[in-house]
Length: 152
Image (tube, rainbow, N blue to C red):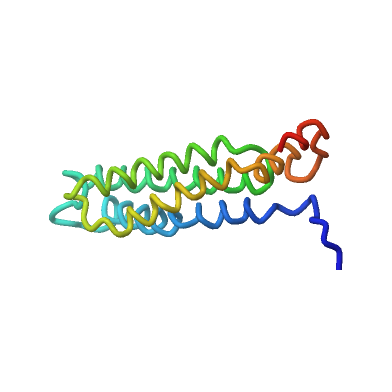
């Protein structure tokens, strides 16, 4: 058995960051579907988060766009393109989660606490030396310069 890591495979720390980043994905899927349906297809007497059906639909579309953005960031980190989109998505997740914890009117804090902790973990894992080497090597496609590798 060879102990050397395959340079074309993401390191475990990147896989961990991606796994933690997926915590928010199911919630975004459910919320986008729920609010788009409530805003466009289903008659509701009292909207949940806005004062109109159009507002509900818009909230669902925003959740759907954010879902696409988060998944795009995950894919970019996994293939070693860069981490900027990934970081932006996770910072937005962290900020929204903290806001929902602080705002008592938004409901119980359990889910926002979990998503905030997951986003914080993804950010920490994605700035580690192993994640930096992964992005610098373009996902294992090019060798990391010896001088850069020595610093990491």
